[in-house]
Image (cartoon, rainbow, N blue to C red; front, side, top):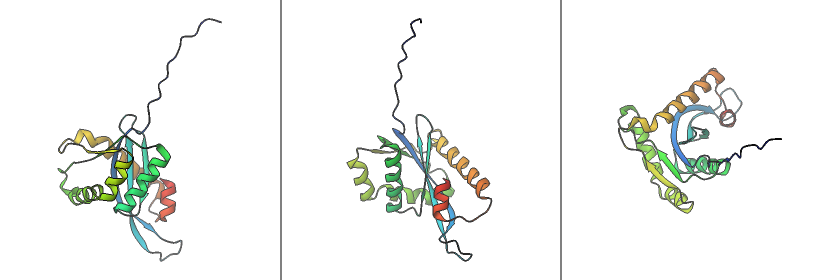
Length: 165
């Protein structure tokens, strides 16, 4: 047999630089009964800046505890990133309240302590720079479209929607 060329494969660490975005609210229910209590849930999207790989987690609210739980699940499954990027697009008037909630969320001492211990840097992309968050927004749009097609108007339980994601 002839000599085969040497192939050098370097494995890039997946999800090293991660963008975070939230979508919602989505209505979910508590039980399998007809008159089950409905509540709002949100999707937390983690997207790799290098490979564009997407990781979706369902969160019960935009609270600090819910976000940290989603971040812990992400880190447990994908490893901890070195940098997390958050959209800073304050030019969208309709999402201004949503962004204010997110900024309050990530500036909580519990979140900052969690990130500091793991040597994760939190970075906001520049305002009025839609090219930074376009991938996140298109990924959220795709996720919502697939959810609508899959669910076809059915109200799912929180666990069912989490499994579906």
